[in-house]
Image (cartoon, rainbow, N blue to C red):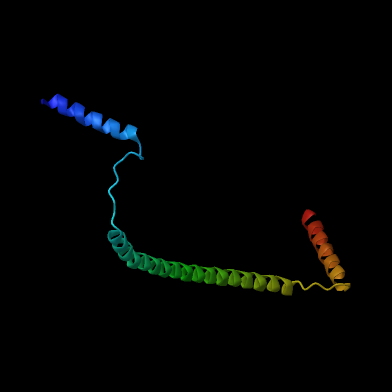
Length: 122
């Protein structure tokens, strides 16, 4: 047999294998003992993976809780600063509903500015 004939035989067998499909492939029977040994080896691995997954999930959940608390405290602090600034602005000009003094003060300010403008124009 020369080298070309061996290549043809290999190519023919590979193409027959792909044409045959899954149903006609030769299956190697697995003994029940080997199957159970495989399952027994996989059980500790699966348990270890579940425990590791639970650990990482708990760590992620703890980090998420810390981030939520930090962001919540930041929002609370900013809101508190905003409320303080608003109260300070309200304290400098306290609203007096129904009080005529605001109108009189505003009228005096307008009158003073008009007088000041008249003096500067002359």
